[in-house]
Amino acid sequence: MNESRQRFLALGDSYTIGEGVAQHDRWPAQLAAALQQRDVGIETPEILARTGWTTDELAHAMRQHTFHPPYALVTLLIGVNNQYRGRDLANYREEFGALLARAIDLAGNRPQHAIVISIPDWGATRFGRESGRDTAKIAREIDLYNTANAQISRSLHAHYVDVTAPSRAGGDAPDMLVDDGLHPSAAMYRRWTDAILPVAENALSSH
Image 1 (cartoon, rainbow, N blue to C red):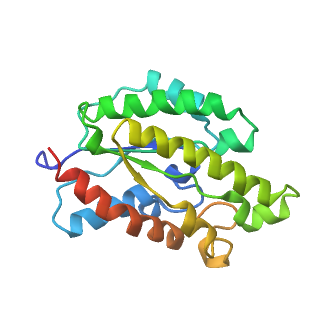
Image 2: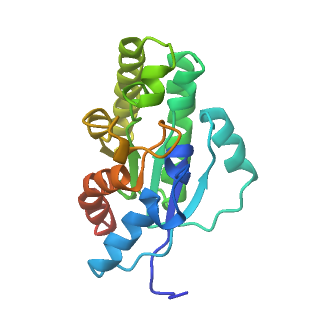
């Protein structure tokens, strides 16, 4: 591995591990490839994520994991499973804040090298429509979760990228979903990557 390349850590759940897509189609992999195409020296992302994880489950996994800080870039996308399971918003705020503080620490205590990604709206997908659940209520709750994680990101001076809007704009189209009708396809992840790329470039140019 090229020692001149900077380390990239991606933390999250199914949206970060890329449930249903090939490894190179996960958005962290797409992001690293896009950065490399722009002559930004970045390693293949180290991903700590699993389908179904909530904030406390990610925190537990992080306590068990051996990291190799400092990372030049750390991304955090977590919370959809808290909402899906009907978890308390105040609990999410507390646990998300601790996760982001840990992410910043792993970035060498440089908040400008941490990027929070908003929670997509799973209610906008085919699975969401067919789930029998109130999709308007899902959207309202996702917005509340994202208001919370955006506020925490600002308070800790981390970057923030909204992927909720693209998840709602055509996010139910067949080519935007994998076969389960819930998780994003490589094409949807490309939309996310396009949104994250300039922010990641800015983060990596920070000192």
